[in-house]
Length: 390
Image (cartoon, rainbow, N blue to C red; front, top):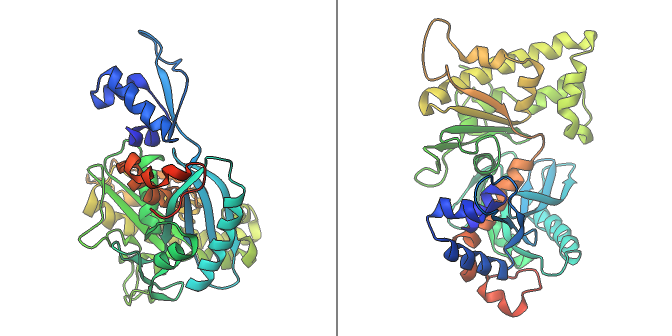
């Protein structure tokens, strides 16, 4: 029930009754228990209900929080995220070079200390979701490899947990982004989708098939940035050549428009503005056209393998669609032939790191949603304080 309230960001008692098959008195009792735990709020009557008695609305409590962390080569993003997928207090700590694991721990600890001291009474941090641009061991959160950060076999999750005194769960950044899209974003109620995110550390992806996030045998599914798109192409960090993330890069766009290092957050608008400049538009346009065609080759392979109904593009990949509307969709189709690509929709994720931060929070919320009372029971003696290790 808490999962329904969370994923729908508010639901009426009547909707809960229909969704669960439980009777009204059982729903009322369970909602009352969740409210007592500080996880939901009962609010005004559902004004959209047209028949029968108006039903009370149940909303996720803003006091139940997760700390989301997303380190990258030039910034460490940290935010509190409440149940319902709402980001509060986002902080972006810029770095002049890729941070070490120890530096990430120090940065996050300092930010968290400031956030925690300013939390209202009865707000609790349930845990930490860590989104890493690399391969992460699903068992203990060890970063097996994050090549763009220069990390290998680094116990970042354990180090953060020791420093923050909170449970930490880690996963690949693009995979948690896909989870956020499936739960709250463009992929809600879509059974088969692909999320592709382009960031400073390359291109990653996540796949939802049959309504389930694909994890693979050892949790490493979704490395879509290593789809081959060009023979004899650029060297990739994976050891191969011509991978999508080696050929379609954020750095190429930054260099083409001469954007200063400290202004990369404005890359999308800066590229679109440069395209309006006749003296520079030809060069920038040629780079965008090349990247679109290579992205299309990668997406064709992905579509043929997975047959999704929706592709969601995030990060700098949004630029390619906005700069040349319709070109990518056209490049995916083969005139005169039918196939899995003909009914694929392409949508853009919100600008920025929102899906990744929201998806990271899902990692921390998962054990709470699975067993709310059991998860919170050790805190019963100190219900007004932010949560400590369970």
